[in-house]
Image (tube, rainbow, N blue to C red; front, side):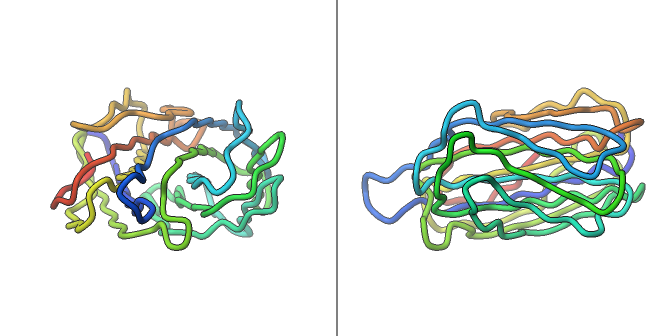
Length: 207
């Protein structure tokens, strides 16, 4: 059993139109301890109007957290989940992005903390309102799930992030592709694992 594991799933609508499909483009992650800021830079310049999803893990307080990038895009929070040990994990998204070279996402917090950041680029998402649904869950298990959601549009992006309070080899759930695991060592850092899939309208959960 892994103590205090939780997972959150965020779902994104595809752009209107029969030929629009959401596709994963690239991702990057960084982690550290005893720091008040963290950056992650995409290897390639993102495309104009794409979707960027950023996940931030902070311990112990998460106070004064701000997120920005070198292109000046606005990041909207989805939901924040707190593990019993006190780690804060939040998923953010920037829609219809303006690009820059380099494209670096910057997170700052108040004081020296454990700070983990993972960023992801997707093409084909709805430029006006990409976030469809979100669900969170937490517990003590080595097979966590997000809880159920029911979607109505084919070709949705199902994006999930998990964190835990142990040292574990985290793997992607059934049907998902693992994107980033900056660290799995909760003794020093805030563990994060991200995964995604593109799927039809369905009732499903992230695992």
